[in-house]
Picture 1: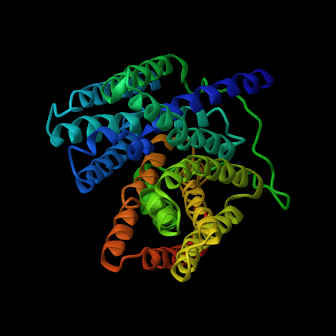
Picture 2: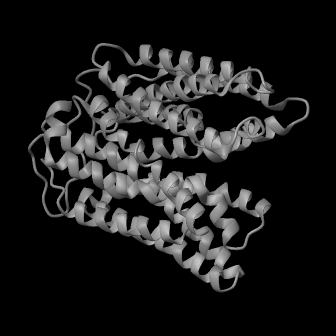
Length: 411
């Protein structure tokens, strides 16, 4: 058992590195720079939406074939899709293709490849940590969330460098991500059957000795707990998804200059990662029920903080409005970080380890409706000239999530 405990930590580190590169999905707001002069914001926003949708679908297909294929095969598929997606996209830069090519290459190919990597790495690595499911998921997903800050800023520096430029940057990304995932195919594996690990921590009050029942995907989606959990996680993710889409605009609205707003947006990657890590720690140490309530509280407080900042700036733009505004968007993204960790823990604790890859990929489909929160915020801003109404609606949605949360029971 001790040898297994020692072997598994390097596997977690490898998983974090892989997801750091795969998390480039969140860096679209930065690496879309070469296309801004080619197409309008609506067309580029559609590419991001397509990427998110096919990321979810890629994870679903990866889970669907997980019992008939190895982790190695699925990661090789991921490497090929991501390499092709970014390499083809590089030829569009400078007017070399239509936006349909961008949608097909970046949105569909790269998005699907990221989904395959995400599902495979989390499923295989989590299997090494049955006693620390929350912490393992949180650390892995922190790597995924930090990609905006690390890989996004690195790509931005390369793209702006006169000797490199965006076309070469996309080729570098294609090769680097492809190689990382190809190497991962030989390193990421679930533990051998029969491997013994420490048992999860006992509850301070009591510990049930009964094993977790394994539910098939069909059995899972029929459970009231699944339907309520899906709604709850979607509502938790909504304000963070909106903040990721319009954070720069909010920070400018509360009085910051554009250059400062761009710097402040870099904080979002840190808080996204911290939300994932913190929620993982909370799940392992406080349990699912208490963590759900903390998640609800943060998801209600976060958009209300944004509303407060916008209200202060409505009276008089000040340093206070900027500080509160930055805290608000960071809290929104922090609460967003709870959502994927919650889905991972729910899939493992409620529905068992046997069908985890597919069950987790289904819960991860919450990322499809969540991005529409940003569309809602942008539409309300266009109609009213401000974001306050949008974030009041998001706070109300989070309050509904709290009520939904009360009805979630372990099957």
